[in-house]
Amino acid sequence: MTIAQQPVPTTVETPMRDAWGAELVSLGSRYPNLVVLDGDLANSTKADLFAAAHPDRFFEMGIAEQNMLGVAAGMATAGYVPWISTFAAFLAKRALDQIRVVIAQPHLDVKLCGSYSGILTSKTGRTHQAVEDLAVFRAMPGVVTIAPADVVELRSAMAVMMENPGPTYLRLTRDPSPVIMPAGYQFQIGRGVTLRDGTDIGLIGTGVQTVRVLAAAELLAANGISASVLHLPTLKPLDVAAIVALADRTGGIVTAEDHSVIGGLGSAVAETLSEQRPTPLQRVGIRDVYGESGPNDALLEKYGLTAKHIASAATELLARRS
Image (cartoon, rainbow, N blue to C red; front, side, top):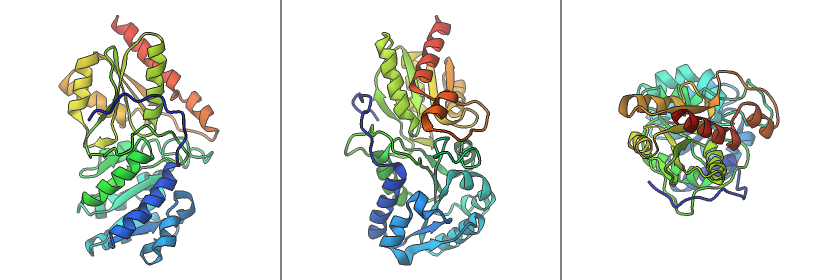
């Protein structure tokens, strides 16, 4: 899928968690079998919007994530479509055994929604930062893994999730971020989106990090470097054809993610290129360390996730190729 070249966004839209809560309310009105199970975080994830609108289909499960996933599995077998409300760190670690055994293995229709993903979690620190979640869920057989770039893509993805039976992990962020998708955009599972055409270097992003990838492309353009930007909202199934086509067109790839470089987007792209089209690659992401508490801009700078860092990685890769 190709979208007309996107400018660097300058406006801030609704936080993804707010859009998620509002879209749940809308979906709940259309799907009477949609239920929400919350792990005592409804005011943080914004599941409280659904609780107010559909109180008979909202279940407060308390700080008992493992039990919550077991209940969700049972409800799925009875014809309901449970949406889980908790933090990404708790889904990917605390409740993982229950997800694997009672949801993923029987391939039940449960939507696993992980809020507060990545390192930008409002100073909650390393215990609440999820930088391994994409690696966990993309490695789990049968679990679709989605990381939308903005609230437009999020809303479209949620509608698609309701029509696509089976376990799905949806990665959500806490804070406001710019909108990069046009009105009317239609998310498709397993399809990448070309946001900018270029010939010198290929930049690949996922989730909200794609906003910073677009900004990096602008920095490169100012220095005469033509960068193509591919957004991959689905880590599994992966758009292998789009990755290979980008490698063919540019001859060099830089990936960027608010996640560990081990097992996430960078690893998925490296696996694809090594098998399909060996290509010089540079990965931008968390370098096998835990995060810490701090302001968003300071964390992005310290862990090398800014547009400047992405542009620098591209410049270094081009220099090595020369």
